[in-house]
Image 1 (cartoon, helix red, strand yellow):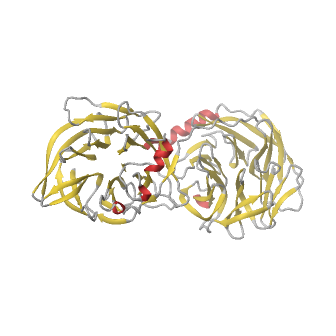
Image 2: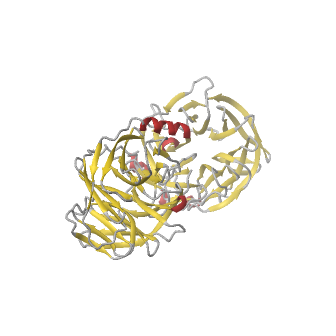
Image 3: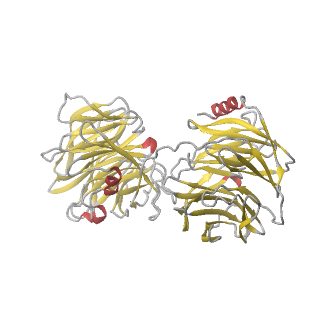
Length: 631
């Protein structure tokens, strides 16, 4: 969507809005507590608590509906946020004196802060802090700083603050942002931009840094003055206009924010900043922090919790590799080499499509880097006769030369050596998979972005590798991932925007058959494909890049879908979640006790916590089989 189209869309929505309700607000009686910030709280774990207040000099306190103090903590505090469940309450509070964000577990029974820790001191002033809890019950803090500075931190697991918070990613936010809120149910970070509008950013740790306008100031939207405080209630958003004495309301429906009728504030407002609500779905009380005082009023605003969406199940990676040397979109496709004599000394080959081939051990440590050019996809087959040696063969597509780049893997040590290239007739070589027939002959099947596949027979003539064209076939649009079931001679291939197909390589007349098409289960792009050969059943694993998931289907017709999953954040091992996967590989071999039933290796398109060049993640197949109840 273009910027012009976005502004037009917001303007058209705003044209339908009119003020229909006036809310009378009055000042709440105050004591000697010198307010810096105040918000209503709705904690299921502590329903008696109604209002949380902070002060630069007198600390933090919690009040009930009768304004009696339930809890007080000395300190120097300003902005804050909280998340609560049956286990307790997690607070994130900006400590002015230390210029850091304090994280603490509040025990409402003992009336004490426990398990306190601090986010390391930042190089920018924190204007606001807001919390986000994901599907795995991991909690993150967003720091909104001056001049567009922003960060996301991993701060708690199961409501318990981490001893050492971890920086997930940096953010580029609007330069005049001072307020934020996160909608956990839709995973959206909402921020204001003074004199401009209100924006929504994806809040997930693996999300792309993009934004969409919720509303803009006139003439591009319906905001009359300047947006400040924000409040979220059941996927509805309230935005305070600090100049126009208005509260704008929006509802999230059908993947977009819809404008509702705003509320007009009646009363002596001076400099309204913070906005919050307390009460039930049918009866709400409005709270506004306004120039060191609190204003309150009753609101006729009915809201209902939205039905929870069904989320895909999650596994976590056991190991992550060191990053590839090249920056940007570099890591692409892995291949697993099994050392049958010493399984724990097996290797993972991973392409760096900006520079070469990375070789890792099972701990994710780099053993070799062969800087040979822009390699895209790689595959491996054992027992290739090369001169007087027998080696395991790795073949990659080299986009610098539109060639097949060949490597020998020493069968005892796993050492990888370059042994030559074979030219192809493809104009823009892309994906690749290998096939080994019952006689042990090895074939390479690269593809082109125009949809063509060529099957080459690879053989050695002394120390020289030669290739003979066996057959050609094609799909209508761009493919990439493919994998061959050697036992049956069938190739599974992915047409990125359309479907996964299967073709019998031993028959030149049999037409391709559709395995699964892009739709509700698989989301384009279709990227990596791999086969897991179990004792009783074989499964095809598909990288569904469009929704950062992996789909498992039976490798035999009718290709029944067995389930889908995502790879989430591993809090214990400090391994980030996985997104934007290009290539993957899987093996059912024994790789030691940690990988007794094999492993899945996937490329991670966004390396975070901390941010770095792309890498690869290893997942025990046993976890996946248990999660999806596979045989």
